[in-house]
Length: 193
Image (cartoon, rainbow, N blue to C red; front, side, top):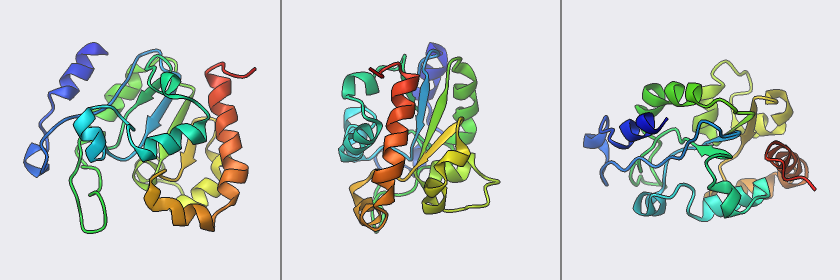
């Protein structure tokens, strides 16, 4: 695993298309029990090199019911975004994750993880990639039907502050989905009291 992570950290596959250069941000360990597959690092994460080190990460940790100590323990949780580097800024927010990363690296990473019990698919890009044959085709419908993806996947909207309108329109998410996510995470990580 160390060799694979070192190889990924040196990756320059899409360097010419990245306005801020390459800085692959991910965490993984062969013993991880949960994998988080999100979109791509934002500018804060790009600068710090710490995944989910922003408001989106604060929200995701709150949804999961865990603190930063548990979240960043790669023996418990691997963090493998769809795009490993900050894709740059677009007209309405960050650009989509680069399409090179997942085909190049995801299968190698996931087959190296021996103890995974749950994969969180956070946002539309991760869901589109991993649920290609899914008939629901949009995040809202998938999240409403999250139980149909268990036990392998737990589908979530992206926790970005830009999705606050979605959260207000879909109060069932916090009422019904978040408690189930917390239960799954805490059960797998043996954090239940």
